Length: 309
Length: 291
Image 1 (cartoon, chains in turn yellow, blue):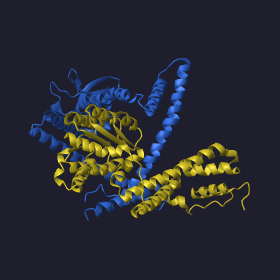
Image 2 (cartoon, rainbow over the protein chains, first blue to last red):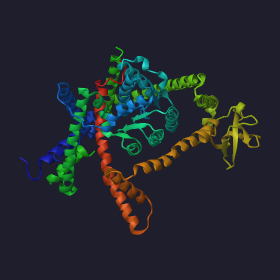
Image 3 (cartoon, rainbow over the protein chains, first blue to last red):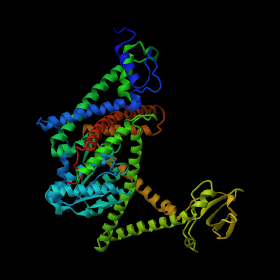
Image 4 (cartoon, rainbow over the protein chains, first blue to last red):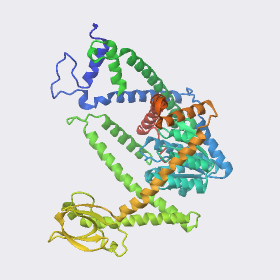
């Protein structure tokens, strides 16, 4: 039976202490040599592991539901609709499409995802008979980009549309690459610039140079620090999680749609956790001197341990 | 098997590295080997990336040579690119060769700086190789090139700059040299200024982008204009109450409005990264591989 001095949240707090290897008050000290969970795993990262597991379960469940035919609506995203529009515009004007996959290495998830989008763009340009230029900054990204463009042309049934010289390695240096891309924009005058991936300081230079050449520009990144420049200088910007919805939006593949739904569901959980946390922080007002006795403060402490770090 | 083997490698290495992240660092942890495997895999990746660098150079040279031979309008730029590429490579290779010959004694000799013994053929009458800055134990400092070391007397033969007088100095008297190789000279005097030039274009591009973006065409654009104006004014040291007000508003905007927006984007993007990463590591997403 729980007393006022020992609430449910105090029990949870003690349990978390046990997982972390700290003995709960009044319990026998664990002797050296006997091993708990902390011997196997880094207990500080346990909430992260649990969160990943929960997300994975939700994601696979949502994918299965989508494959069974459950409809997954996605709101209209102007930037993603504009991708096809940009390629169509380039086709009408008889000018190439420039695709910049960002400047980070292949180990960055955004770059890998950019290669997936590149395959779709390559398929579209091959279907329309439009030239596609892909300048890259990293040698490993070069091989992935070549493969993506080649596969895109194959998907369109146009293997002859693949031009190896249009996938170009420029430089490993940030501003040398930026200068090279700006040079391509000024000399080859693409009608559409698609910049999707990880960008840093060169983002505004690329966007402004593209604007000066009169190209329609669609840019996007999952990182927030360069988005303001893209918003100011480009016609369409794909922001944050919209970036990872590109392939699902364009292909409407059930597995991918399920992934988007899972992410949205977890976002709802995150919003709920935020609201609860804000209320707990405001109302419970944890006082370290009364932590052991105050149920509200203990609840906040538990909440902080689970979601705070 | 052409697709299955890469997928298998991806899944195994992804799961192993993920496991290493969550493994305890305790010395007697039974899963500690995952951290060692993780470190080894990352080192292998560094080697692969370095080798892949050659692929990029090959692509660059192939396309440039093709455009030069076809008399493409960009041919002059490609020629400059190739001359720069191979010229700098040659400079670096020449100095590496000489440095390797001298490394055993330079490492014993000096306390700080990077030592380079300049090849004799680069020290002609009109040499462009910048001299090293040499400091002796008695406080004397001068510029010169380290020509050679006499192991029997443990003396360095130094060619001073700019008078090009030879002097012999006991090796123990030399306390420090500062490397001023041709390679670094090209890097410091050509590459760094070019990089700074490109970076400085941002200032002008920010002004032109702001001029286009900060127009009150709609409600959102008006809010953007007002917020931008307040933040910019907050950066300026205005006197009196106006300065305090703009600083306070700027602080509030950046901490709460901007901060909240950024965190929202980070949360959404992180979930997207997590979903995509899970799909790739578990081998579900394969569109980045060839078929």
